[in-house]
Image 1 (cartoon, rainbow, N blue to C red):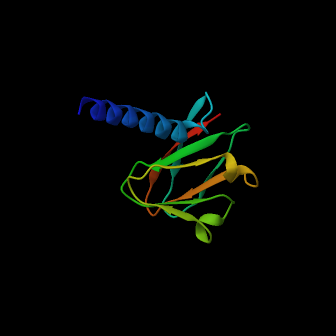
Image 2: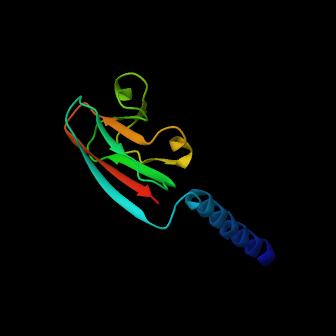
Image 3: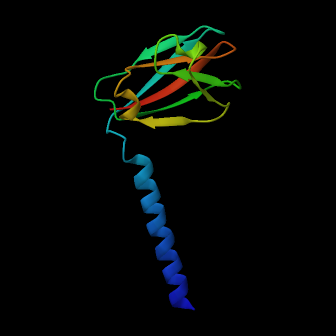
Length: 116
């Protein structure tokens, strides 16, 4: 019985370690925190830094956030991030794009963490 318990604990520790590694593997060593002020229904863009490893983004308020990877994209081709959700991506999004564009239905602030 004790051996099974020790094996279960070892498995949990290994799984937690693997899970943490997969979450953080794209992150660089230098986080850059950026706040982007949004005006209701107006697109605001952030030009990505060079040597970007990934980013995390969320909206402070209780509204959904539109994200696009081209200027003008939040009105046509965009990703919707629900309220309260932190969305992240690795640098594969920036192989062809170097800009993050945001739009919201209310005045709000985007909280962005860029990993270099």
